[in-house]
Length: 357
Image 1: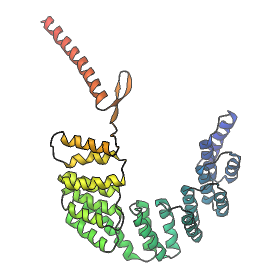
Image 2: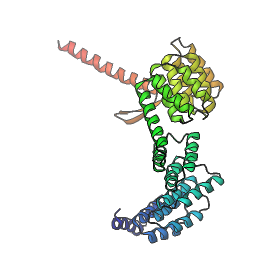
Image 3: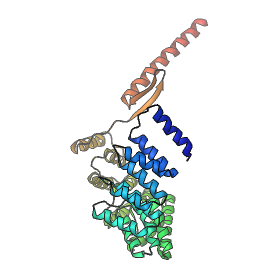
Image 4: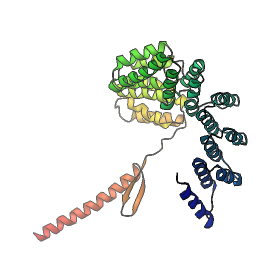
């Protein structure tokens, strides 16, 4: 960053009495801290009458970046309300400064206080486990990631492979890498039997994730085969299937036209996401064309559970500027209007041609 240019911008704001709200102050603190001008950053921080989690995140990450761990922790402990995002900033900073034990202690502390680690927390703390030679702790973190569906995050997955490799658990790193890679390949190619073989091996060893379950369902969806088996696998999973897993199966049911399976999946999706109108909208796709009776059935069911389909909308540029349209009502009216205008112009042109003859 260009410190001199940034200071000139700051001076311009002050000289012209430009009102600096909390977002501008946060940006300035982050700028000065990253440039190493920590005194300026601290001065601005202390002058602020109102601070939010972004303010603390900017000052903490800046001081961590330049190795001032204790001062960063002082800022963190001085917060009235600590949020998960700020915990993650501190944990990441501690790991970057090779304070692995402190980072692990902080993860334990946040859990005691009721904060649950998310994908950012996991991807930050996993390198600390490899550096502290804690294979047992790494496996526990892996189990937590699988249980909570974070192992499908690319950063978490990469950190897990890296951790296992650095701890010498090459078999675990290789299996996790290969199984994810092969299952993805089978899913994209529609190799249902191959995907099932891999998934069955992973199922026996309890080494699978929600993301891999989605891959299996997606593989079945491409050919509409073995969906009932995929449903059984999903139903028996020790991990609670989320809406993405059931959604992939619903797509497979729509491709194969399996009405009963589609209805079964929709019921589960409505329990998981009762406010999602997309579920009820997808259900008739599973049903062959049988007139408007099924549409009426869907409308009645949506009304029963208190759902209302949000009308589609779009924009179109006209001579009067960009206009918002509510599909299909407004669009149909506008198309009819322009059709009539075009038709009148066409008739006038034809009449002129006839007079000319």
